[in-house]
Length: 591
Ligand code: DON
Image (cartoon, rainbow, N blue to C red; front, side, top):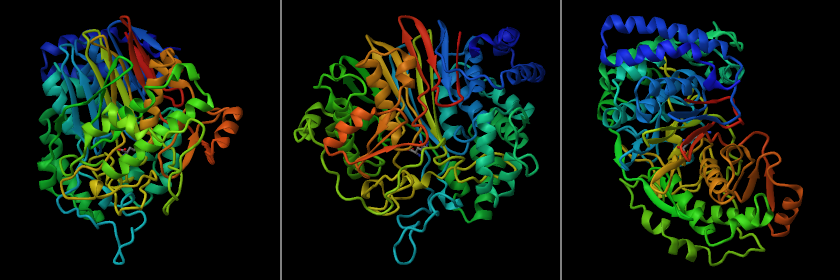
């Protein structure tokens, strides 16, 4: 059953929303909450529905990791909002319906392209608190203390999501915070039926939350695991969302929410202060602008490495006949892996928060640089990444970050990746405020040469410093074709984000695949160090594996799990198509 045709009953709600757009009185608001409840009951009916197929519409489309959140976005557009209003509403809804990565206590990046052709990159990445310092995760002998940057209150960066979503609403949206947050409040307050996917996630994460009573209270049914089909309510989160709806940024960064967050810090030995929260600011940045085979590409600049690396890898492979090599051939995998290897080596050396360190962005994304960097490419033979440093573990595939994509018929396009870093962040729910905290501090390089949770290495460019933003791999991307948004994509997956995004782009642009195949087909990943090609099941044929080994690619690792979650949307000659990644139980919606 397609999600976009399951909500015929909701026309009344959409009509109501349009009306409330003009009359946003308290009475109207309470009636809206009742209507939202009806809407939730309808949502519950869709408990086991996932949407592996492309959805189509002509007015608006959303693809995300949560069918409920995608539907919220479409309803907002039906109620008169544009793609930016929808993206903000989806962001808040994901904080309720997809708590592993949708968040209030984390951060992210948004790329936007407006109907007037304006382009922006909004950085709402977490920041290191004022008391953070370079060696904060090292012991007295200078060694990294295991788990400190991921499983403690010190792991938390100052959250940016609320400031980010509200900033874009103010600048590019047309609705009020109350209007776009109302669906999230209703979902938190009235609850929704957990699907199997989310109920399983809770069950798996509960042991790691055992030390934190507020986390256990939120994610279990009085200590017992939730089962699929049970209604899950989040009363404290609903209250926090209401404070944000009523007071805007101050509803999170000041007053009771800030008090609760700082009290949580003090309880657990964290260092985020009220001043850190007050001082948090989003940064409007210029997107990385590149070009690939005549398509214009917008990517996220530092503190993400995503935009730079995707462009670098595309530059490296552009001179080759990618389409002619054929999808899945050893020849093409080799070409792409060698491009990935070189780009990730550059990442470790050159990338960090450009506000604190001189990142040579323009040099790295220049076509001439790619040509020079690729002169030692041998089409017959793998090059050699140096011997791996300690912690040579494969990045664990997991569900911690989330990407969603939105387009409307006005010509607006929004690409958002948001995260708590590892699954359910540091597992700490702020007592009384109902939201999880991130463990984004692990994305800094705690010590040069010591890999982080994704096996990524870093240097001075990504060292910890007060107020600095940690380097990211998140790669929200917008492709422009003949002056109009054509494809919006991106993914979670730590270091694999870059290569997942890259493969969706190459599948669409080079292989000319339809969106569903471009998103669904298996992926592979190389990140320079460790010197391994990781691939999804069925991702590299036995024949191609044999050929790659003959080229001296020694370690080919088939993943037990999947790679990425590239919820993408496309405008194909006026048809708005949405595809939620079939690897997971997300959903797309369109109208
Ligand atoms: O910003 C980054 O690169 C990481 N914090 C992203 C984490 C992530 O994608 C985890 N998801 N699977």
